[in-house]
Structures are given as structure tokens and as C-alpha cells.
Amino acid sequence: MATITEIEKLIAAGRLDDARDEIERLLEAEPQNPQAWFLLGGIYRRHELWGDAINAYNRAKLIEPEGPAAAAIESIYDIIRFVNTDLMNP
Image 1: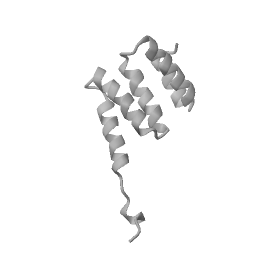
Image 2: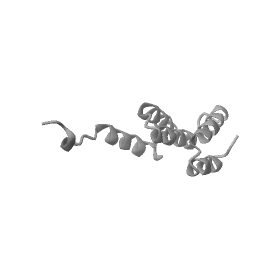
Image 3: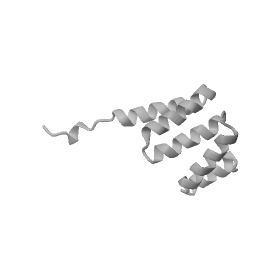
Image 4: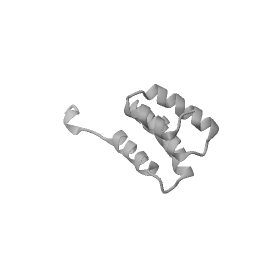
């Protein structure tokens, strides 16, 4: 089982599938680890799996309400709500 630091290195190297596998192993042992849930949300976000990302971020937020997950959730909603009116048909 990898540590948070090792998982962050996998993510930085672009090895997202490996990082996700390691996070899932970590969460089996430490289901209340807010950093692991936050990193999992980030991986889902990179894959544009918005619902899964929000769910993972919400788990992190429930465990650590003052952590960065709330801002990450709001930024996903900003992405989802974005509309470029210049690309709409008249």
C-alpha cells in the first residue's frame, strides 16, 4: 500500500490508473482518510467523471469540513454550468 506522498508522485507522473489503484487500496485500510478521498476526486476530475469526482470530494468534505474539497466541488459546478453563448446557434 502506497503513502499519500507516493500516490501524489504517481499522479504527477501521469500514472493516474496506478494512482487510483493505490488510493483504493489505501481507502480499504483507511476509509476516513480525507487526503485519499480528495486525490481520488482529482483523478476522477481529470477524467471528466464529474459525478464520481463530486462524490469523492464530498466524502473528503464530510471527514474534513475545513479542507480543500468544498472549493473543488464548487469549481466542478462552475465547469458544469459554463455556457459559451458565442457557440450557440442564433
